Length: 91
Image 1 (cartoon, rainbow, N blue to C red):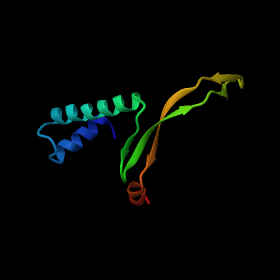
Image 2: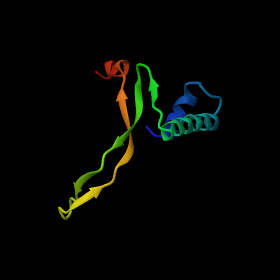
Image 3: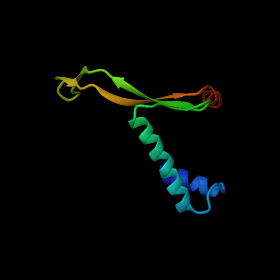
Image 4: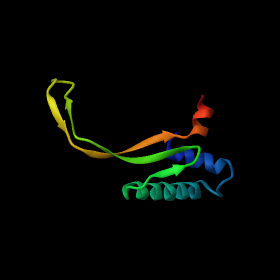
């Protein structure tokens, strides 16, 4: 599902008065989530899941084309862990 499709679903379910309003509000929520993660904070929705900022250590990788070893820099990444309620619905 894309961001536009999600906004359309929110509009169709009567959550917002127009598609444009749904898109603006969804964009606002995503911006807040982005700002929170950039600040290094986690986002936790009890039962649904957790978005967590993690540090990835530097490591040695391989170029798949040549087989040459390549140094991969340390970086931050976002990890999602599904909550118990969501996992129960999936299984």
